Structures are given as C-alpha cells and as structure tokens.
Length: 471
Image 1: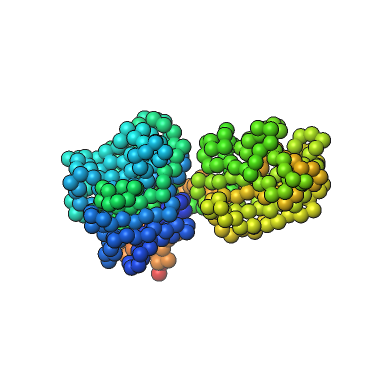
Image 2: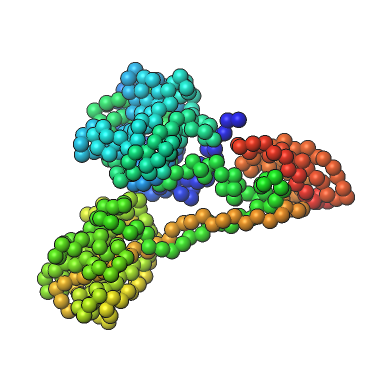
C-alpha cells in the first residue's frame, strides 16, 4: 500500500522544522520562511495559482539568504513538479565545485533524481543517492512529494531518498563522513554559481528543512497519532491520551572539542597565553578562556554561534579556580545577540557584580523574545585587573523534547465526538489520519459497538470501539 505522509510532515514542520517555505505568497519577488526571518529573492520565476513557483528551465532562480542545510542530521521535504532536463536541472544548489565550498546538491540529470552533499570540491559525504527514471519517473508533469533524510553520521543505508511513498525509500546510500559543513547560501532552480548554469524546469510548491532525520517519526504509529484520541495499539482497543511535548530548559551549547567541533563556532575578541574560546564550553576544571587588554580588559568578548537561530534567556558564568577569581571576573558586562556576527543587539547589561568567589558559578536571567544565531558576553570592565577570565559559559534556552505517550484501556468514550451516532463517528474518523471502513456490528441498550478496520500504513487490523449513543 502506498503511503504518503504529507499531513504528518506538515504536522512535524509546525513543531520541529528550522525553515519552511510554503510558496503561498502568490505574487511579488520574495518568498518567505514562515518559521524564521529568511527570505528568497525571485529572479524570473513566476507564480502559478496553487502550484507555487514555476521555473522555466532557462534563467529562472531564487537566491536564499540562508545556507538551508544545518550541521548534523537533516531532512528536506519538497512538493515538486519536474520536467526532464537535457543534461542537468538544479533544484537546490548549495555548493560550488571549488575546494573552499561545500554543501548540498539536489538535482535532476538526464537519467534520474539525485542528491549529493560535498565537503569540498567533488569530495562527497556519501555516495550519490539516486532514483533513476526507470525506477520512478518523477518527470511526468505531475506533482510529487520528495523527502531526503540523513542522520548526519557514518553508517549503512542511513542516507535515504523517498518519492511519494514514505514507508520505503526509493534509494539509499551509506554515510561515509559525519556532517561538519553547512554549505553556501542556497539557490533554487540553478547551480549555486549562478550564470544560468544547470537550470531547472518545473514547479516548487513547498520546501521544509529539519535538523533531524524524520524518517522514523513518519513511520511511527505512536507518534503519528499522538494528537488524536484513539488508536489501535498492540491488537487491543485502547484510548490514547497525548502527553504533550514539553519544553526543557538547558544549556544549548554542546560540549566543544575545538572552536568548531562538534558544531557551531566558539569565538572571542582575543586570547591570552594560547587559551582558546572553546575552553569555556568544556565542563572541566581547566583554566578556561582568558584575554588581557587595557586597564580592566575593556571591550573583550567571548561567545558562541549556533548552526540555527536559538532563543536564549539565561547565561551562566564561572570564575577561575585560584585566588585571582574575584579580580578577573566581569564586574560590568552585556549579553549581546546577532544574526550576522557584525551587528550586535544588547539584550541586557549587568553591573556591580563584584562579589565573585573562587570557581563560583552565577546565573543571569534576562528577557528575550527572539531567536538569534549568535550570542556573546561583552566585558565592559573586570573587577580589578586587566585579565578577563572565565572557566565556564552557558547559554541557556528552552529545548523541546518528546515525552512518552500514556496508554489507557479504551472503554466507552472516543473523546472526539460530541454526538456519537454512526454518521458522527464516520465524520470524526475522516478528520483523523486514518483510512477506515465502518460498520455497525451490534447494538445493546444505548451502546453501539462499531467494528472499524483501521488501515495503517504498516498493516490492516480490526478493532472494536465501544461508544455511547447520545439521545
């Protein structure tokens, strides 16, 4: 049975995507990411009602102001109508063929649809994953749902390309290099270098990017139904009570092993005695990061650039582990944020912080309603010396995690229906993510017993749901 989970992908996109271009503007020269502030500038491509943007295969393109692909795991979903090119048709160009560029290539060739991800020049992170036209002719003039996923790791069959049927990939490949690159600002419809190279002919009507591999989530029955009131589980009729996603407050900077590993960028204005910026993002008792300048290390700073915009509302700072701790800690400092590492917004300023102890950690909270790519601590002055030393720095925000669902025996209440007649039950089921066949099996007193064939995308089972008839 063919399984198309576009409904699930858009449900996931609301919660987890890092960018989502709906292509629903219908007019104008800009496409907008509804999750963040990213935009794309249209050059030549034209709007088509209910079909997104049409690219003419000659010189149309859209230049995005984002690299599109995150560091680490990723999934890219597109709603696509394509026409076969004579040679190449670049759907997403996020790289160029030079030793200093890297990124994704989502492309049509004369033989099929393929995806590459380069870490430099033509050195690929995985052998090209390709769906030949002989396997599936995506260039048939119809819209198709395309999903590319990779967990960002070295592995077997962990790079996947789906078309329409998301229960089974049309092609797989093996990750041979872990993701450490994000690519260039992406271009839709042409090779990234521009110049009308490798033009794509067709329509793009939806584009969603995740910083995770969503393939298992799409094919997880528990996840798919977690916003619904009933499902079939382990061959028993049970009521599903969603345990909603909750937000967990934590340090959003990973433990760093260098200024760029495992992801993002640790940075500082200067360093003293070969200390590195990333030392403050390693939770041990090392000396940490230090800088020396001026009378009170004025204007020194240290911070972290995320791979995607984050909303930070707290910072923690730890002093050095010796008698200079109280002198070398910041007395006046600012928390600043930026999207481009050039223009900085001051979110908060803290002053008269002169009671630091040895190896002491303090937490500072502030109001911030926006997501930024980079954050830093800007030292106005230290307490009493021209050294600015921190042994630990955390940027704390809310991180969404998925809680475990709660299952209870299903007895007499579907929970979805205000009036439980057969028609209403059918209507309620039709609004869920299930395909079903419904028939009345028996009626005892005021209770109808319905036999419902639940067509999941893995199998077909029959469950009996008991529902009260409302007079």
